[in-house]
Amino acid sequence: MHRLSAHLRGNAVGYVALFIALGGSSYAAVRLAPNSVTTTTIAKRAVTNAKLAPNSVTSGNVKNGSLTASDFKAGTFLQGIKGDTGSAGADGDRGFDGLQGPQGEPGPQGVQGVPGGKGDPGHDGSASVAVRARGTGAVTAKNGAQTSVPLTGATWTQGAGQVNLVVGSVDLTVPSGCTGSLGNNVIFSVDGQATTVAIAPLVPAGRITMPIVVGTLSEPDNDTPRTVTASFANSCAQAGQDYTVHGVKLDVLAFG
Image 1 (cartoon, rainbow, N blue to C red):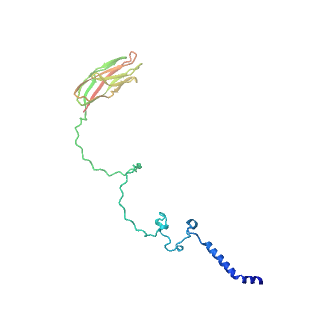
Image 2 (cartoon, helix red, strand yellow):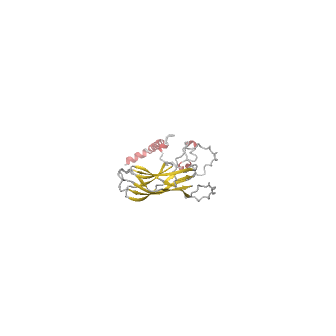
Image 3 (tube, rainbow, N blue to C red):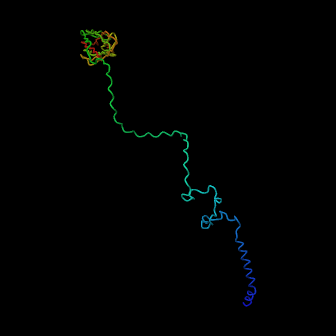
């Protein structure tokens, strides 16, 4: 121990010199070369305003386009003058048709229109009997033949523009039997043209009255004379199967 103390006292100056020498080299070792510290070696938010010297960051240190409006304090920049209105753009393409809307409420009733002018006079709508034709007596209509049934008062004049209707009835007797018949009728012809009929039934046998089917004569342009005739068509096949026409009542009604 005595020898260690004597050694330290004898070499104290040397140890001090050695400490100074080592301390100087350590100081030199911690000094950094210029530009040796970059942004990649600094943690985010490690450098604050307090750690920067005043005016140490200038515009030359900021990358163009790296700052946004949120990086500046409100009111830092003055608002620019409003620019001129731009020219109108081209018309856009026609859009799709919209869906049909719901039906609206009915509108108010319109104003009543002005009454129309008086129309032309119409035809006389009343009807009159132009002629009353009647049978002249009983007629036997033989089987398999067409027999004339004479009429009296069977002519008239159909006026221009008149419509005529042929109506009436036939009084006849049906035979007890009729075989092979294709139908039996009293035929009424106007000016030789079959106009209407009275159908003669096959049954029941005996005397009956049948109506004349209504016939029509269209209106002529001029007054036209008319004549009506009657005949019985009997299609029964066997002898003795005869019809008897007792009477005919035929009226012609004129309209217009």
